[in-house]
Image 1 (cartoon, helix red, strand yellow):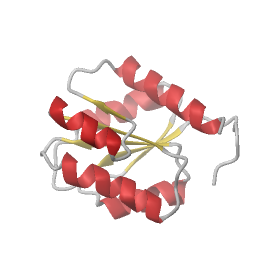
Image 2 (tube, one colour):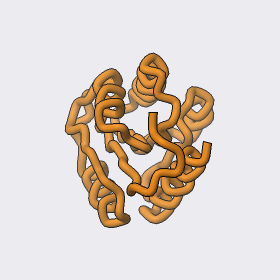
Image 3 (cartoon, helix red, strand yellow):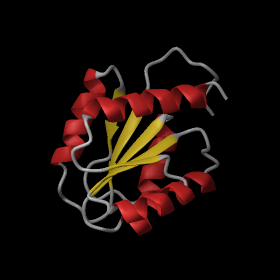
Amino acid sequence: MKQKAQARNIKILVAKLGLDGHDRGALVLCRAFRDAGMEVIYSGLFATPERVAQIAEDEDVDAIAMSLLNGAHGTLFPRVVKALKKKKINDVLVVGGGVIPEIDHKDLIKGGVDHVFGPGTPLPTIINHINTGVGKLRKI
């Protein structure tokens, strides 16, 4: 478990889940997070939910940004949350993004994803959300 109110930079895992080989957006996020002062770990293509949870545990990340464009968000995003819970990881901000119909956002959030970002979301909006969310988690 992370110590409270750490002074270190945010460490974020950018996870490209499932059989989705389109990583341009994920790589743009990696660079934007790095430019914002975050330490970035990239899962690479075709990560499983269990692999994402393992990386999160091994690297002691503060946040996970999941990217998915192939329509499997309703299955894979909840499996990541479940895999984190199985490892008793409760202090990591989990967000998702990609081509995800707005009608699915509520169910994903109910299932433990903090926020879902759609195409065209400005990078500063995503960065600010992560900074705020991690800040709240660090104060717990």
